[in-house]
Amino acid sequence: RATQPDEAVRSQPRTARRGNGQTALRVVPRIHLFDIDIPGGITFKESDTLSPGNEFVTFSNGIAKFGLGICYDVRFTEMANIYRQKECSVLIYPGSFNKTTGPLHWELLHRARAVDTQSFVVGVAPAEDIESSYVSHAHSLIVDPMGIVISQAGKEEEIIYAKLDMEIVKATRCQIPVFDQRRTELYETIQKPS
Image 1: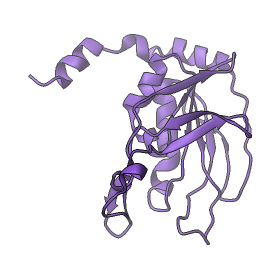
Image 2 (image 1 turned 120 degrees about the vertical axis):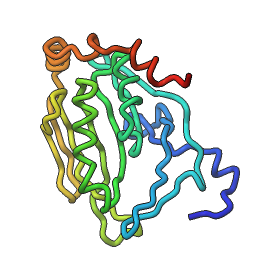
Image 3 (image 1 turned 30 degrees about the vertical axis):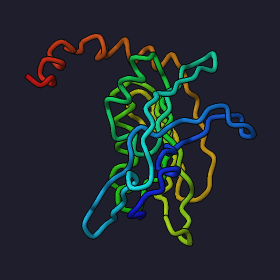
């Protein structure tokens, strides 16, 4: 952990790259920085060395609209809901949860974001490497709009597949129309300082 972050490094947001495997088409900024302190577990403070991004990145492939977040971003319902408002049907979160929070929260959070937004949610993680200074929980997964894990990797390097049928997104949103039933006027009144 850096005690005096270099401003050149600090000004660079943590990013993921979206592209065709050879050329990055877009740099995706991480919105939320990972600052945690779990006694007996892990202490990590990205804000000592990184600055957060402030852009919600979407793209479309002609079949679906995708929203992108990075790792810790999956913990924030508000961000996922913004992607739903932007008409995304697939949310993708590349990330590497640690061995403390990973077993507790990795699957739970991706399933929660799928149910919250009634979207497919994809969690992309590196394989576990016990020789690395940072050991990833691994377990890439794909979750359907009802919160069911439809494909999941183990801790080894693996490619997972699933059919992402956009009709399932439409049907789920029609059958349980939570976004139409939200009471945003009430939520805004309660949240705003008086």
